[in-house]
Image (cartoon, rainbow, N blue to C red; front, side, top):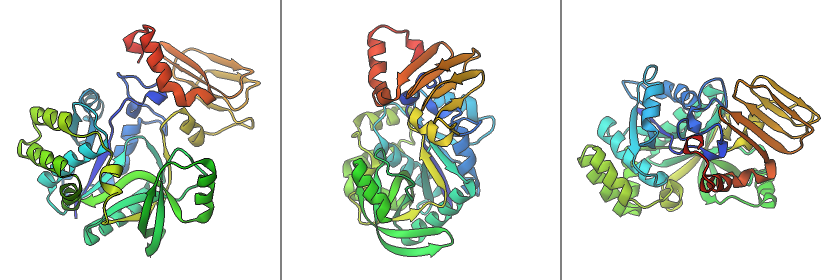
Amino acid sequence: MNIVPVILAGGIGERFWPASRSSRPKQLLSLASDAPLIVDTLRRVVPLCEGGVRPVILTSRTLAPLFRTSLLKEYSFDILAEPVGKNTAPAIAAAAFFCRQTYGDAAVMAVVSADHAISPVQGFLDTAKYGAELAHQLKRLVVYGIPPTRPETGYGYLELGELREERGACRSYELRRFVEKPSMATAQQYVSSGEYLWNSGMFLWRTDVIIDQFRRIMPALYSAACALAEAEFSPHAMETFFHEAPSESIDYGILEKTDTICAISGCFSWDDLGSWTALERILPQDAHGNVQDGDTVFMDGCTNTLVSNSSSHPVAVIGMEDVTVVTEGDAVMVIAKKELPRLKEYLRKMKDAGFPREVF
């Protein structure tokens, strides 16, 4: 059984501005360790590859050269470069046909994201190998769920059905349903019930099984992906496929509509590094809830404040509360934490105000 890691690595990661830019996307930032996120991800999944299997990176046409330049000296991988972003369903459809063409019908795709913090790696590998066995033997789509450690309104949830099997620390379940991002009160109920997992956005399935699901549930996308494979994923064929594909997530497009699915409980800690807020969960805090990332930072009289300094300049933050301060090269951001969810909106306003293109 071949396991083929498929890494979702599109998007710049605007919620990490000014550290993330079009010239250096979030995946090339060192957030969870001393290595860039994409390198952390490759190190995590490469042990799954055997018999000449190479990870597949799904990214944008703009970012693909950056990844090739920064990663090819150390890692061997394939890239599928999307000319335009159309969410995860079209990207995964293209990857499924590519993996089947390269590794055969029975190859198991291990779909992961490039912006997750996961530890320990061995727990991830144990879960992935267990899930791959289930996907291979049962011919079902397998969703990674994470036992929630807090009520979280920013994640979707999986409502669990009957426990299928326990193997060491790993468990598999029937899956009742996917649940949208809940209110805080509902999230608290989910956590206390023990019947829900976070939806991690990571999946395992055989190439022939997921392709058949596209044929049954999204037939137009299936037909377009067939044509893409027949054209051997040429740049022109990729252009046609992605421009004509619907913008749809794999969750809405396939997973919420299929009856061929189950869930596994991850044997590792996990966090989705979606914004500066997530960084506070993985970095140490002082007694006043402050987080310091980077050198030459001086903080005094602050409460619940994050300071990230990637520049060579000293940064002093004094008497601040509930604030995020980020310095990166030629840009500085000071923002009230309550405004962080609107950061993309503020970036649009800055662009409209005529800020130089290179700072974005």
